[in-house]
Length: 113
Image 1 (cartoon, one colour):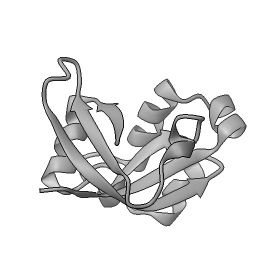
Image 2: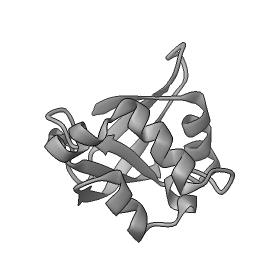
Image 3: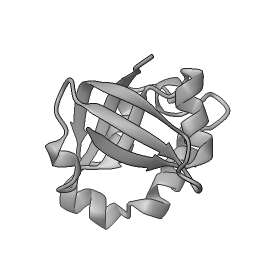
Image 4: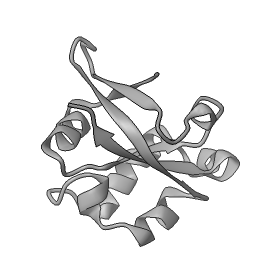
């Protein structure tokens, strides 16, 4: 079981079913994720709400920009956002230098009921 924190907006997108791919840096922590694993997503900032999801696919790319070429925004966030807005938001957490150093990971998930 892995644990990840999510901003309220993205937490809601996953529960609504619009965000089906979680985006992270492919750092040491994410390298331990395997197909079939369970991830417990905790809603920030309180961390007292959560849901669990099963990993159904792992998508490795050099950068979020490259990953975005292969997937529509409706899988990555919600149609209320543009890819540019999402990319800008991701780069607040994961600089282009960090993306270059580690690569990025798209974690395709399925909610566990």
